[in-house]
Length: 98
Image (cartoon, rainbow, N blue to C red):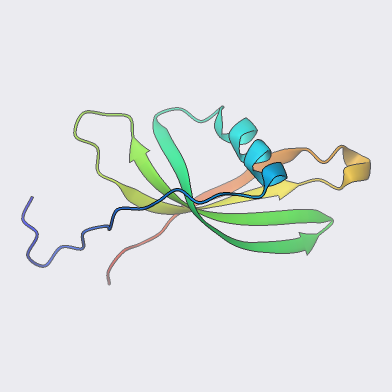
């Protein structure tokens, strides 16, 4: 690939998610096929009727010669009285460049 004019992602170190969030992330992402998501930044939380979690992930497609990218993964965690289960809200690609 020609690097002139193209954005090249840096190498990322996986981040350590809070224990409960890490378990929920692993449970939810186990159902996703075709792309491996590695958390690199535990970015934000939002209190709602439960809690939303925003995790920035490095995405590597499971193909020959994969092209790495970044995505914001949004998880919802139900209230403890509702079981505290996690579910995937969305995966939004992060556009690099203009």
